[in-house]
Length: 249
Image (cartoon, rainbow, N blue to C red; front, side, top):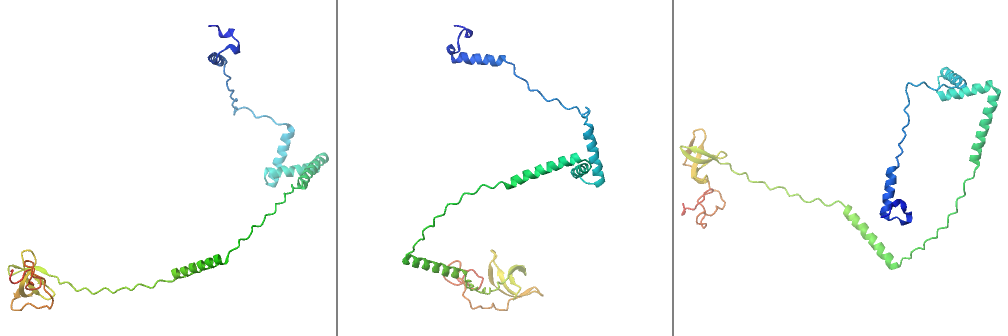
């Protein structure tokens, strides 16, 4: 295989060209970035000319005299210097005249004329047929009536008064004379209490003071339909609160 150095560029293959470029790039030293030298805080400041130092001192005096900003003091110092020096005053007047001339030229430059706008063609008006117009008017009228109907306050709904509920009788389980009874404190009616807690037969009127039952008082009769017997389901129970009829006791 011939050496790369003995070949021309046209005779080199792609791989040989890549190797050659790689070797050249590796052999060439990369330039280092030069960092800016750091300023020495202890280095002495540059000395200004005597004319600049004198001018700065004069501006400082004017500033202290007027008690104004340094910009205003510089303008006043320049004015005072022009009054005392004819050459300086002439040069300042020439500068002001040149500046005014430049401002006048800028103001006198005419603005570029705007192009006239093209006339806008008027759109042809739509012609509505009488039938279509009648439909539109009918629809508008219907929508107005619908809005009026929705805006009208609705009639208040009738509120039915709640039906009075019959007060339920409160029965208390009480042991009287060694037996369980159901006692109603509202009317002192007393019934025997069954084993399952239901109301049994009539016992009489209970006297809370003596703690005894007067069994001579008959059971009050209420004119209301009694429920059917829980056993046979055909005959009515013997009394209100009882579960069985006379035959099924």
